[in-house]
Image 1 (cartoon, rainbow, N blue to C red):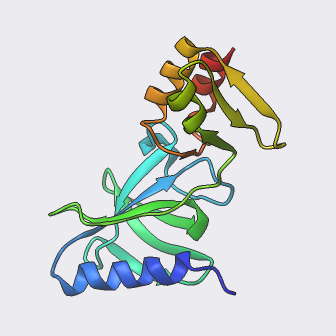
Image 2 (tube, rainbow, N blue to C red; image 1 turned 30 degrees about the vertical axis):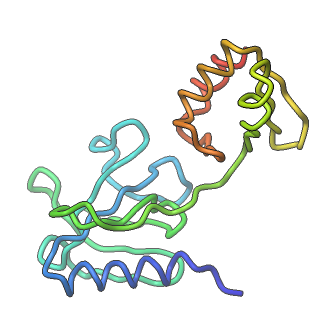
Amino acid sequence: MLPLRPYLLKAYYDWILDSNMTPYVIINTNIFGVKIPIEYAKNGQIILNIKPSAVENFKMTADEINFYARFGGVVFYIKIPIIAIIAIYAIENKKGIIFETKCEYKFNTSNFANKNKTLNFMDKNNKDIFLNKEKARKLTKFCNKTSVISLTEKRKKLLRIIK
């Protein structure tokens, strides 16, 4: 099947505009192919207003969105691969969608919750890693009790916790 993300992105974009609201996207600037004024990125991300009145020559394809936008009065060409889009939402009410990111680690929190001794998770090579209670508590807090975590922006902190 074809990737679902471009269809969801287009649907949410249209829905937000049809609701007379302003669509914003959160972009992972670490993804290959992202072309933005990097000085405006913060912590590997940038948030962009993509309302038609805020951009020029807006084009959305199954692979990317591109347009021209002003930053500090200067026009920049913006190119964003669809895979780099973390979320799209209406700024007025924060309704939208957060897309899945590439999962590198899967956590099995049931072991920790049930036995209250260790937390185990599998790394990207499906190798089990076990943590003591204190490290597991920090990791669980860090992951906000989610069952899956993306490490594209959180890798350094995660590695500090498990070492």
